[in-house]
Amino acid sequence: MTHKKSTSTSAKLLYRPIGLVSGVASGAVAGILFKQIWKLASPSSSEDTPKALESEFPLRQIVLAAAVQGAIYATVKALVDRGGARAFERVFGEWPGD
Image 1 (cartoon, helix red, strand yellow):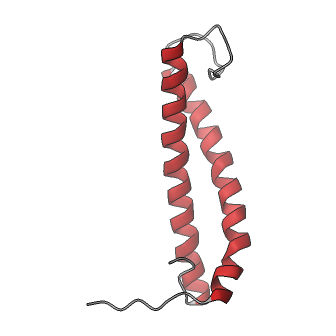
Image 2 (tube, rainbow, N blue to C red):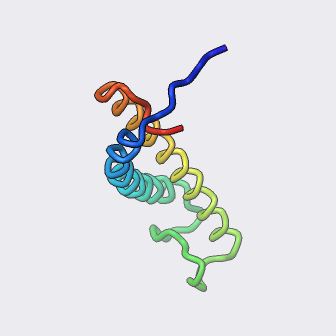
Protein backbone atom coordinates (compact mmCIF):
# COMPACT_ATOMS: atom_id res chain seq x y z
CA MET A 1 0.00 0.00 0.00
CA THR A 2 1.37 3.38 -1.01
CA HIS A 3 1.06 6.26 1.41
CA LYS A 4 0.79 9.65 -0.22
CA LYS A 5 2.12 12.67 1.55
CA SER A 6 -0.49 15.42 1.56
CA THR A 7 0.33 18.65 -0.20
CA SER A 8 1.10 21.59 2.03
CA THR A 9 -1.03 24.69 1.92
CA SER A 10 1.98 26.77 0.92
CA ALA A 11 2.62 24.54 -2.11
CA LYS A 12 -1.00 24.90 -3.20
CA LEU A 13 -0.83 28.68 -2.81
CA LEU A 14 2.50 28.90 -4.61
CA TYR A 15 1.18 26.82 -7.51
CA ARG A 16 -2.06 28.83 -7.91
CA PRO A 17 -0.58 31.67 -10.09
CA ILE A 18 1.34 29.09 -12.12
CA GLY A 19 -1.88 27.18 -12.69
CA LEU A 20 -3.72 30.33 -13.75
CA VAL A 21 -1.05 31.32 -16.26
CA SER A 22 -0.81 27.80 -17.66
CA GLY A 23 -4.61 27.68 -17.96
CA VAL A 24 -4.66 30.85 -20.05
CA ALA A 25 -1.75 29.62 -22.16
CA SER A 26 -3.36 26.22 -22.75
CA GLY A 27 -6.60 27.91 -23.82
CA ALA A 28 -4.73 30.06 -26.34
CA VAL A 29 -2.80 27.09 -27.72
CA ALA A 30 -5.97 25.00 -27.95
CA GLY A 31 -7.75 27.81 -29.82
CA ILE A 32 -4.95 28.12 -32.37
CA LEU A 33 -4.75 24.35 -32.78
CA PHE A 34 -8.52 24.05 -33.26
CA LYS A 35 -8.59 26.77 -35.93
CA GLN A 36 -5.83 25.03 -37.88
CA ILE A 37 -7.49 21.62 -37.60
CA TRP A 38 -10.87 23.07 -38.56
CA LYS A 39 -9.39 24.68 -41.68
CA LEU A 40 -8.10 21.27 -42.79
CA ALA A 41 -11.19 19.25 -41.85
CA SER A 42 -13.97 21.73 -42.53
CA PRO A 43 -16.72 20.44 -44.77
CA SER A 44 -17.36 23.98 -46.03
CA SER A 45 -15.16 26.30 -48.03
CA SER A 46 -15.28 28.89 -45.23
CA GLU A 47 -12.16 29.22 -43.10
CA ASP A 48 -14.22 30.61 -40.21
CA THR A 49 -15.17 28.28 -37.42
CA PRO A 50 -18.95 28.06 -37.07
CA LYS A 51 -20.54 29.75 -34.11
CA ALA A 52 -23.97 28.96 -32.71
CA LEU A 53 -25.55 32.27 -33.75
CA GLU A 54 -24.30 32.25 -37.34
CA SER A 55 -27.16 31.24 -39.60
CA GLU A 56 -25.04 30.26 -42.61
CA PHE A 57 -23.83 27.10 -40.88
CA PRO A 58 -26.06 24.05 -40.38
CA LEU A 59 -26.64 22.89 -36.79
CA ARG A 60 -24.81 19.62 -37.43
CA GLN A 61 -21.65 21.52 -38.41
CA ILE A 62 -21.91 23.82 -35.37
CA VAL A 63 -22.29 20.88 -33.00
CA LEU A 64 -19.40 19.01 -34.64
CA ALA A 65 -17.16 22.06 -34.37
CA ALA A 66 -18.08 22.54 -30.70
CA ALA A 67 -17.36 18.87 -29.91
CA VAL A 68 -13.99 18.95 -31.67
CA GLN A 69 -13.07 22.24 -30.00
CA GLY A 70 -14.02 20.88 -26.57
CA ALA A 71 -11.99 17.70 -27.08
CA ILE A 72 -8.93 19.66 -28.21
CA TYR A 73 -9.23 22.11 -25.32
CA ALA A 74 -9.61 19.36 -22.72
CA THR A 75 -6.65 17.41 -24.11
CA VAL A 76 -4.32 20.41 -24.30
CA LYS A 77 -5.35 21.59 -20.83
CA ALA A 78 -4.74 18.15 -19.31
CA LEU A 79 -1.30 17.94 -20.93
CA VAL A 80 -0.32 21.44 -19.79
CA ASP A 81 -1.70 20.94 -16.26
CA ARG A 82 0.11 17.64 -15.81
CA GLY A 83 3.35 19.01 -17.24
CA GLY A 84 3.15 22.08 -15.00
CA ALA A 85 2.50 19.96 -11.92
CA ARG A 86 5.46 17.70 -12.71
CA ALA A 87 7.75 20.67 -13.26
CA PHE A 88 6.55 22.21 -9.99
CA GLU A 89 7.24 18.94 -8.18
CA ARG A 90 10.77 18.74 -9.63
CA VAL A 91 11.55 22.31 -8.56
CA PHE A 92 9.82 22.43 -5.16
CA GLY A 93 9.68 18.77 -4.16
CA GLU A 94 5.90 18.71 -3.64
CA TRP A 95 3.00 17.76 -5.87
CA PRO A 96 0.75 20.84 -6.12
CA GLY A 97 -2.58 18.98 -6.16
CA ASP A 98 -4.43 16.35 -4.15
